[in-house]
Image 1 (cartoon, one colour):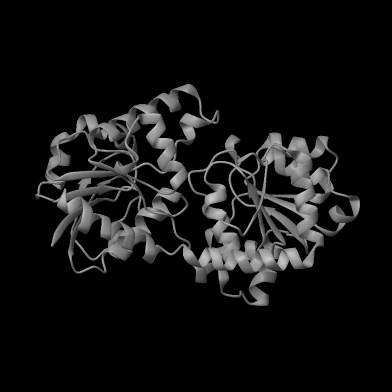
Image 2 (cartoon, rainbow, N blue to C red):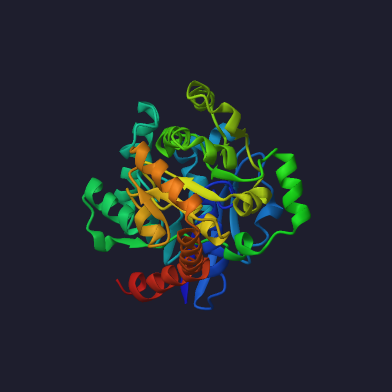
Length: 375
């Protein structure tokens, strides 16, 4: 029996990749009889005990009276950390890079999902330096590192000079049924009306952070023929003001629907209503939106850089994310070539089915039991 203690600070942050990853993996690992699971969390205002009752194991809680203390807790509360991790554990597993700065009994495994703040220009210098310091601390103090893709493993290995055999890939999963199960027409109609979605549209679903490269989505759409723009409008979620100004400058504002924040319960409907998903990031450690769209039966055009070719397999059209003409040509092909479109849908469904949380948890379980426990 292996005693495993989980860091659970982010497991209820369902809108973040780190939160979803930790939650799904823990829920699957609880099913294994050869793991004795416990958890710990720093409790800040807004968190509720009942939100953690789905985890069928003991969770040690350290209460913090104010949210701001969460950011400095590692300096102020080492005793509290020792108290909530007081039992001897064979291994502590953290699903992010934020390790408590106290000595923990047993081996330590941290997760570095990507190096976005270090490899892109999307963060300011202060955020970048803070991130670098925390990741360096995690690398120094962890016995092993987890990450989510082969690309991220190589990136982390090269950047921090860690042997690749000390970095282990636990891929993200997708809730295939949640995106693939057909949504009834009344529900789809309601979502379309609530968000004022056009009848047929190309979808960008995500944030407007710089590395997401939404500018290329808008510029490529502007290169489409008037006939295609009349038939297929463009829907962009979470757009900032510069993106709206770009659409106006290019004269395509009448064809573009800018949507604010989309409720998580409506995400699958967006994908099922869309005719095409564009995901043209300049850097990703994984790329879950690709799999979500594929599971929904929506063809995907994505970037030929970072982890995106690895995750999309042979199921997406790959483009240079900065080559606007190439992107526009790919969009035109998918929207006008029925055989290509159907082939992409079929391959996308097959690709998405491979990425299950059950499989991801099994990979981590086998690593903990058969490799880490025998080191």
